[in-house]
View (cartoon, one colour):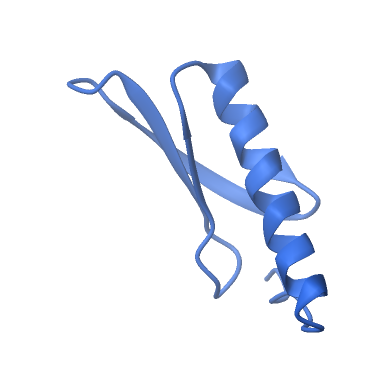
Length: 66
């Protein structure tokens, strides 16, 4: 998955029946989860947007993607 240059990997937990993901191309930790693909995509985008807003509110630069 890719959003605003942030890339994520996704896992599926069969027992819990939930998808979980983590952004892999930054040093900061950004995670998300969802019960469907559409919910997962939305959670990913929301998590990236929240991260960027958090950094901006603190006057910090977001960790660069690599």
